[in-house]
Image (cartoon, rainbow over all chains, first blue to last red; front, side, top):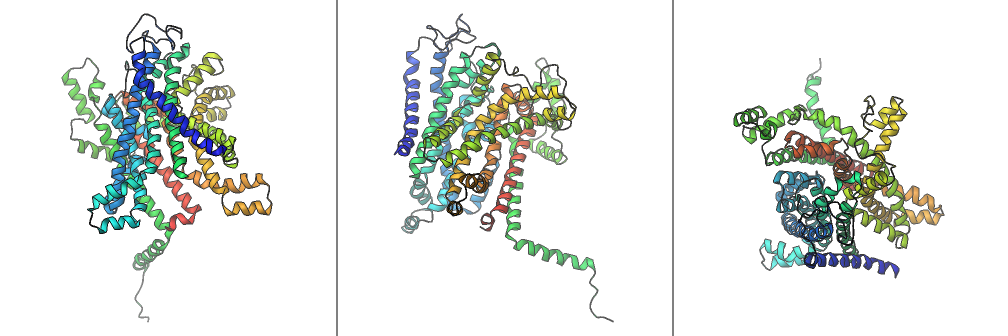
Length: 269
Length: 364
């Protein structure tokens, strides 16, 4: 009984957190007293009534910036998860269904991509493409497409031997239709779990890249950028500059991971 | 007189080799080895291609960066010629591969030193940090993973899994900042986050390149203590984050093993539970954990880049970050190759170990 409650607790806690974040991203920016990039004379202010999370070296309100960043970071996480899922599972389905030389070529390519830790792959690609929101999305997406290709291909190999696949072929469906319309939907359950995980990784990677000065750059309000600005003041003790954006980042990633864990347990029942 | 034709060793050896080959070919383990090796070589070739062409389209002209902001057109052109950037990309690639085959990664454009020398000088710092972090990771995740599996479904399991999920969500650089703020700024237990030794301390004579070991070899306890003093906080930060996925892997491997018949038999025979869990089950759970150590390596390397940045640690990760920033292509390529080669070789070794330990893998 306890186990059952705890199992759903994970999914519940994750969804609640995520809904909270979406709410903040949606209506938060309109509720703020300040502008995210508005410079003021009150630099390095400790958290106070006027500035609940303090101010940074340009006197910008950190709370405002954290709230505005929520929208940007969530948008990047969702976009990366959706595109890498869509592209990866279609490639995986086609490759898994037709097999043969196509499978051999694509899977060798996937092997090459898997030879790099995904954060480093995203780091090099962002370095190549240059700093912009679209480029960081592209880079992180490319780093995670192989996960979905491998996953869907593996599922496809089992699903295509099921009797209903033969039935779909024998009534004269073209093979792309069998692969993508009949079989692909049946392989998607594990990809859902993966999608949630990828969203969590994507948000951490994006912020990590921004922290290194890649992708999203200053003065944009983004969690990694803000933490990076705070890191410059680490030896002088202005802790509020990096603590709040970091807490938001970690909580958001935590929400995605909890949902992923919860979904996995749900699907395994 | 014998009519048998003279069969000298030279005539015999091809057929002998062929039959030897045939015997080898019929051995499933050897066939598996060969296939796996072939795949690794293919991946390596792909990596070289990706490393070269991906970095070649980096925006910005390295010659311009090197010539400096005040350089005139003529000087930039001269640098381009010198660096070989005026040739077609395919020719540059062929040139790169030829040099690579001789162990030459090309010139690091920022310092005009061979990139392989610079990388080699940076490797020990990264390895030292990585090894200590990995040791700490095991020290954290082994007990936690085992506890969670043994008490599956209880509150202990739940708390440990929550820790693992939370650990997977913690941004490494944020955790590092918290560590520095608390241990350096607030409590003054740790040294400032500036490289591997206190400024002014002389590096121990290089044997392994690992400061802790080298200083001990030189009998210099003070330097060793200083090196350890600088090492523990970055290593602990890295270990906390990496132990999250590791704990999950150990837990699920242990759960699977504890469910096996031989464990039930051991229980029925009346072996003490501690022996069953720590000897029989753990030994068997080691195999699936081993296969995932490639993933753990990935976490460690990626984490190193960030930790080295935060702690100004003069390792490979900091080197590539600076190289990316300065358009230093040969250095970036060298780093990519280094990581990919270690990754591919590691996965190869793991697969081979796995197939030696578990015959079912190589037979199908």
